Structures are given as structure tokens and as C-alpha cells.
Image (cartoon, rainbow over all chains, first blue to last red; front, side, top):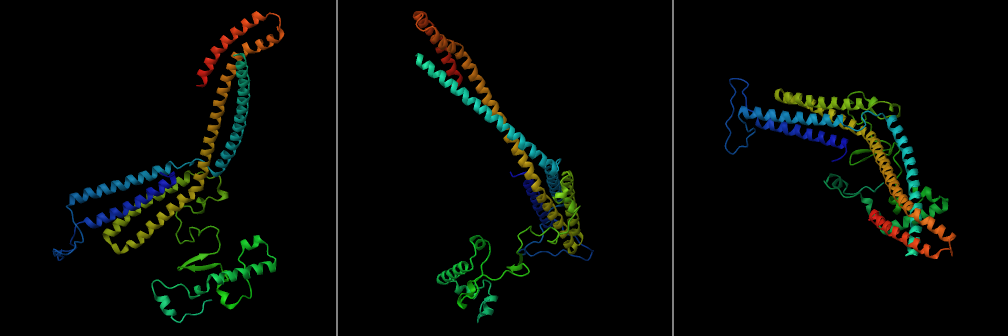
Length: 138
Length: 261
């Protein structure tokens, strides 16, 4: 899991892989057709490597459908990733303004924190002295 | 620079060519000698150390057998080839998108993150990316169609796909500075929240401790003051008082222990 942009790029790479895989499948499994009545599909010798492994039309159609669906799904995924990119609503100027504001707020918060720490230390000292007193009485 | 080699032809033709013949000159002794020469030269010329670090010092008039140790001049036009890839001296930005030979789809310069463009929202960038993604799918469909009818014409379509892909990735990468700023904002926000939480937690503890002190103090303070005032007056009642105080205190001790355990 990277950031959104990396996810987006990875999704795009996956889509490309799917393109290649889809193309390969179609190229491998399509049926052989004759252009004219004179054409003949040559019979292959048993030891010859087949160029295509034709599957029956229904399986081919189903395969096509599945692959196409996968492509669309991936595409939708990509579009979803695009629409969730961080800060689509902000311009650079907005961002800089936000950063500056946050900077001030953080400084203020730090000031408050330090005050609180100081107060804590004081209270701690008081408690300490009280405890010492109690010890004296014991 | 190098002396032409006698069996030069063999060197160039072979798959793994030998290093250029002048590598022989780089013996440890020669390197030492060159170093000494260079140091002398630097001293002589009074070049300060910063310059020595930053620039390449070329020592003039060095013995011919050390000539190969002297770094060559920088290429005048700032370009040279390494493994037949062109390189440039300028370390500025890599080649711009158009320079790399890829046509720009969509509104070209409007998309770049230039300083004049600070106000543009990034919604249009998202829109651009979506357009590219859709075009990619459509072009793939067309590509499959072309492969079906005339595979020889597919080259063009492949080029289109490539262009769209490169454009897509380029736009995504252009988005990165924006995302980085966005992440910075997020981190600062987290930091702020953490600080506020810490402050609140400290205040909480302080308040509790204060209440505790008040509880103790309401007994303690008068007892000490009164103890001073009444000294020697009523020893007995004072002792009694102290005993009472101690009882209360032991109760408070228990409370304290519960609080901080």
C-alpha cells in the first residue's frame, strides 16, 4: 500500500498487463476462418506446434466477456482512485495558507503545552513538600 | 587522448570490449605522483580549499606519462554520450515532456505546477486523468479491432496507446508535489491534535493533584500556622489535634495511592 498516486500508477500498470493478457488470449484462442470458398485450413501434422488453440464459440464468447468485464472493473477502480486523490479541492495557494495557519496553531498549542507542563511541575513541587511534611509528622 | 592501439579493430568489434588502453597509466605510483603535483599546484596558485572541492583543478605542464590522469576538459556544448545515450551537463530538470518526444494530450502547460498556476483547483487534473483513462480503454478497443481486420496497421494504434499511457503517468507524477503538500498538512494537523491532547491530559492531572492538595492543605496549613501560634499554650490539645490530622492524612494517603496507582 503506497500513497494514492502510487496506487493509481500501480493500477494503471495492472491495466496494461491485462491489456496484454487479453490480447494474448484472444490471439491464442480465436477460431480460424476462411476468406473465400477456395481457402483451406491446412491440417497440422501431429508434431507441429499449433498456432491457435481454437475453443468452441461459446467458450470464446464467455472468455471475451470475462476479460472485457475485468478491464472495465479495473478502469472503474482507476477512476475511483482518481476521484479520491488527496486535495482535489485545494489549489496550491490554499495549501500554503493552510500550512501557515497550522504552523501558527501548532506554535500556540506548544505554548499552552509548555505552560501546562510548568504548572504540573509546580503542583508536583507542592505535593512533594506536602508529602515531606506528612513524613515529618509520622 | 589515448594512443591509438595497434589491435584497435578487435577492441571495438568484440562484444565486451577491453577498457581503453590508457588504463595502464593509472598505477598507484602515478596516482600518487599526480596527487603531489596537484597539491603543489594548488599551493603555488594559492587556491583556497573551497574552490578545490568545487571545481576540477587542471594542473598545467605535467609530464607526458601522467597526461591521462589529468581530467579532460568539460565538453564545450555540455553534451556527451555514454553507452550511446546522450547526457547533458546541466543538472536542472530532466527533459521536459515535449522534449522527450511525446506529444502532450489535453491542456499542456495549464496542467504544469507552475507558480502562475497557484490558484487552479485540482479537480480539472482529476478530470484530465479520467479522460486519459477512458481514452486508453477506447484506444485499446480500437487496437483490438485493428488487429482483427488489418494487423499491419496496428503500429499506429500501439503508438497512440503508448502516448496516452505516458501522458497519464506524467500527469500523475506532476500531481506528486501537490500530494506531498497535502500530506504535510495532514501531518501538521496530527501534530497539532497530539499536542492539544497532551496539554489536556496534563491539565487533567494537574487539576486532580490540585484538588488533592486542597484536601491536604485545608488540614495542613492551619495546623502548621496554629502550631506556631499556640506553641506552649495547650500541649495536650495540640497533640490530640495532630492525631486527628494524622488520621485524616492516612485516609488521604489511601486516596492518593488509588489515584496514582
